[in-house]
Image 1: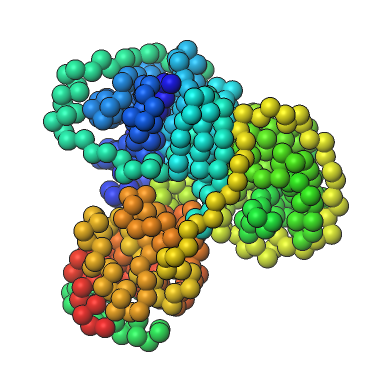
Image 2: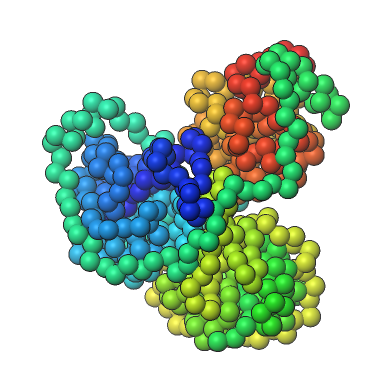
Length: 252
Length: 313
């Protein structure tokens, strides 16, 4: 079975985010990007399934800043094929556009499962996996934390609140929105990524699908105005610890 | 097309989720500004009575054995059919485990724009929380109709409770041969600390950096006679069991004192702890959203503050 894993780069939230001059988007000049953490989990789950059942893993992404590095890192982790879909995409690319473009390429591939991150921090027009499933005409299950494959049948756990999980069976091909892999996503040292850059053929496919667009436009981006704000305690670590101790004692 | 507002309600184990009431309350405001009605959509099997306290003008009830439990394929097929035949002005879907499998599906099957992570909306604009709650975005949809995926906890639930709606049973499409089949629910394993019953929770997030640093926060929890809880990444990394997770896919907690250590405060986490009596946040990022919900905030390094605090208690 070939497992296809769409990944994307998103802003790293550890960095400070600022609104750009248009007032409608992020200032991307100094923005640090990283692979969507849920996509990392999707790739990990795909690699675990390959280790258990054989088959291949294909990682696919739309062209964009730093995407080559992300694809080579996926190859270094164990992906068999890495594919870049090229085209002139908006930044950030709406998920409807991304899903159309990806579906157009994936439909000509051998595909038993599609595993992708359940969500990302930029999903203004909805989650990629579900859009992709409907453009491909495949069923989907999101918020998945466990996958096992038995021939053409797949058993998955979909997570609800409070630790309750629903078990589903699905007939492949199916698109799964991964919440968490069974194992912590594997780490790959930079040296192995460099090696993959030399030894891996990064395939490029031009996007043909029409630009679906988000179906909406941003009229304003702003830092949330909060209803309230914490009383900030100032001073050295020692001093604030003292103040906190008093506050905590008074509340218990 | 109509000016009506569809609310896709959801339930699990015979209980309607609060987010359904939250959306019904909001839909009432929207319907008033558009001059339409609130139409609740309920799917299930023998579940019609779940709609008894819906504050809606009408309930569309689709009953079928295949719809007894949530099934992404069967639910999407049924709901898409209803949206396409009724053509409501707006469809509100929860940004929940079930809703995430519905909203984007409707967007494709009904060819409607979708705005996700919605924290507020009115007839003029739709506001989403993006980037883990660090940015708000107002969207304008193209065309007359849209779908909004609404964050749980964004609106009061009481406004959506009432009753007296007329219930119309609707035809269910052919559901034989679905590719996705519900098997059963699995309850969490017991045996661990019940974090919903604690007076004090010390909750740890990504800021703790690695598993070896956990004793620092565990010692604080022990000193306070409380328990250790966490945000999602800590559980995904297997540093703490699932039973300790606070938030959307974890538990909702309401302790007397909640100390968030190295937690930025993504909407999914806030959903689970915002009702705690006293919230203290320790995070080096002064712009972390958690400070908008905390009563007291500290931006000193947790590795300095937490041991000092443990010492002083």
